[in-house]
Length: 257
Image (cartoon, helix red, strand yellow):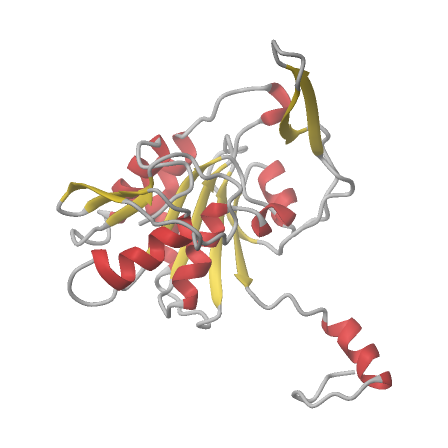
């Protein structure tokens, strides 16, 4: 297990509860501080420090990706893990968020090392400025993971699960969704001045609510459903590649169309 919110994050405790419905052989390696937005960053220019909390819980001075590598290659004793769970993140990881998410990155690293991996995130209503509500992930996380594990998926795919902040309707609906895209940039920049007159900045998101298409991960969460999106690391635009292959040499697999 790994996350990007840090070893003491409440979502990690929820994830461990979910994991214990599957097995008692649980290992946790998580950052010692919050590493949100770390994406797939590696620590290459300084040493990584590890603190042993107990026999199966470790905190790491590095990124979520570092944590997975250290766990699989050294800290987890015995056989290679059968499954890596990453999360439960404080806040959603949808649309283009998945490319910067440390939570998704932890799962991606697991996938790269040949281990089935699932990223889990609990949505928060940024629009209303509310704090995170963990009820949905607490109540439905174990069921979602157990149902996913009934199926196999390609080795180059990770599962990205997002829980809405509240279930709309009479019961929880789990929906397979594609990765959406927001209609406009939602990044927010807040420039402030310190007591010495120097500028400093806070980065965040504005409260704009896009109108995503039906079937997207964004729409699924906005509709109060649990979203599951299969992600892979191949970022190739196949349509553009087909056009380039008409002009330039191409030696890859046959292209459709």
